[in-house]
Length: 200
Image 1: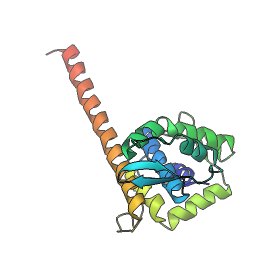
Image 2 (image 1 turned 60 degrees about the vertical axis):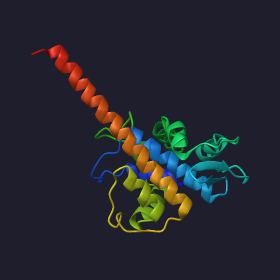
Image 3 (image 1 turned 180 degrees about the vertical axis):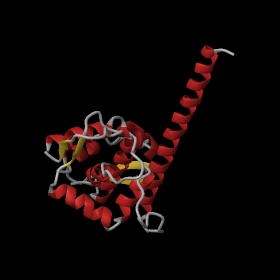
């Protein structure tokens, strides 16, 4: 399992105070993939730009897709561009992959905000691993979860994530805030448009 899959499973926790939006989660999943690629030596950072590494292709299919999507020519891609490009519909891709692997089961109950279908994490080693990372407040998972509004005890604690991971997490925070600003702007524009049609 990867950090992105652990994050997806964590976001499905029915005890979460706030449901996670598909767009927010997709951006964080792209950040999680980048962090795993950096950890595996498949990528590195030059300032805020991503430089492809020379390590073997990851075994995980989605992570291998992420590695293949890295820009290998100069000028290298900035982190924020990567998050938006790789993050497009990424939550749906992870849901489909986890369902295909038997990690998600159909569920009767409330509809998840980031998925068209009602699903829940199956009782598998992957779910238990994600739960253990979350309960231990593993710093990378906790930082990414915090970026999308999933709260955890100790999420405000200062933790040394390392320079490159810190830069990626900051990029995820910025991208999520930018997405929220777009949502608010559209909401205001839609309300103004509705008022024009409603008239005095």
